[in-house]
Amino acid sequence: MQDLNVTVIQAPLAWEDPVANRRRFADIIGTLPAATDLVVLPEMFTTGFTMDPAANAEDMDGPTVAWLGDTARRVGVALCGSLVIREGARFYNRLIWMSATGECRSYDKHHLFRMAGEDRQYTAGTKRELMHLKGWRICPLVCYDLRFPVWSRGADAFDLQIFVANWPAARRSAWRALLPARAVENQCYCVGVNRIGIDGNDVAYSGDTLVADFLGHVVLDLGAEEGAATVTLDGAALVAYRDKFPAWRDADPFRLLD
Image (cartoon, rainbow, N blue to C red; front, side):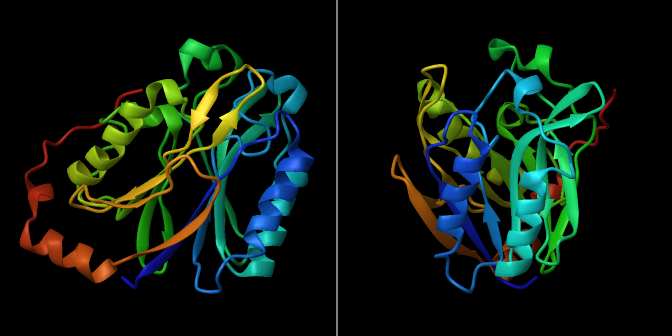
């Protein structure tokens, strides 16, 4: 595996205003270093964590997916983040993975946050997806998925796990504890990208976007500040550690049931 340069963007989100949010992220992406391979945006980065999907959903051929494709090709990076997607009569909190060549793949959030009514407004995804970039196997998940170690578990299944989120400040201690835990138990790097600010429901977000390595060490922490940062993930170090300490070989076998 080659080293992988990952850029995380932590920002406030304009409530249910995709045009303003796309403009904000376009301005930030336009200033990124040329060495970036992957840019990670928050959950529902065009709207904030809205429970009104009927008024805010886009189609897969809508403006935000098109913007992601145009931006990825123009800048020459892979992009990912989630937004509200409509398919027929159903709505999904869908993470879009856009390659630098404009190839689009997706993951639908599996664990829907019942305490906000997400399970009543959205349809849950049924399977994990694996993305590939520069020899890395990447497992993207969304926010509440972080609390469920079975869904997040992989015995040598991936090298990098990504969580995009709108994770409230009231529960920031869980976010900061679970991201390094996922890195340790999966012997992988773990990236968690959250938002800041206050949303249209007066919910506050503290950011805490961070990157943890396979030992659980936090190698990047944006705290509560708006901004973008790029971190280089060391592929050779990850492979060497797994070879030296192959705990993944002793993982308990299991399979997920519907």
